[in-house]
Length: 428
Image 1: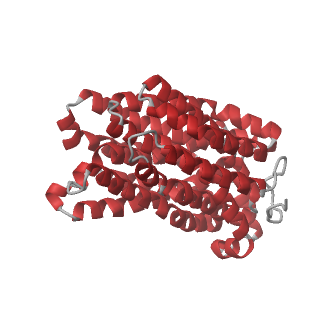
Image 2: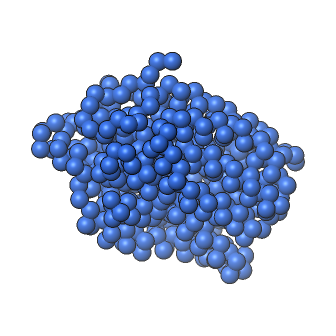
């Protein structure tokens, strides 16, 4: 389990590094470089628009790689998704700016961002199922939480490199070539991840399905016919996690540097410190999920998110790094209360023959609902001179929506991840 957890963590860390480094670049430099004819606010919105494309393609990736995972095994998904995302990320770092290619430059960004999202849409399902289907029942949330640490590690890697380059280079050098270095580094990280995954074994449950000849012939059709309500509820339930995370990791970065005049170094430092605490607490929070259940933890995280958004916005608006850190940390602690256990929760909600497709589609649809539009909506809602209360209201509203969806989902503890009938949402 240690080897499996380490390989899953490393893979998700690398893929989320690829995804996050684009979000950081979108907040800091992509607007002026690829949309120079726009005003500063419009340029940021356009850059976040290319960021959103990656979320729109993630459900497609979950369908594509989910089919592979349910038909041919969880293991092949891990190789294909990581290779695709790594190649697309390296290519982003090679795209010339608008000054060189004109409108073809942002068009290429859109295509590559689409491919990034396609690969990441498959990664989560494969990595989570690899650990969840191997894990002992009473420690499933703990072991399945290790892929959930990957996004924190990927965020720290992406922003650490950006922070070092931002602090060590002049502003002109950073905008000319420095921002490209993290994208080029993704190639080496992807190669290392692929080597690490070569020794991984297929999950016992998929081997049982293959030997019994009970694999789904068309996983997506089975999910659409028998699990559509479950998919929609899980997507709505997880939307708040995406909204909160990308509000603090992407919108807050742009808001702090462009609107409040906080230095890039200070903002990145605040974000990285808060994400480091979140990552460190992930397995401990997951252990609470193994003891008290998945659903209570998710409901608590949603409620905390709804209550914290207005204090968070007030703390961000002070432009004082220590207070900004507290605002961001509170939001991420509410986030991880939910997302530390969802890697065990979602696989337990779906029967094994369609688990890779169902869990991944629900998870990535939540990214569209909560993550794709949040940086753009938050940027537009923070256009005034006072505290951006509209952002807080928007995030609190999503938290209440997710709270209602979690309330309609059943508890799965201590349900085994063994072949069984599909879990349908419980009536309230």
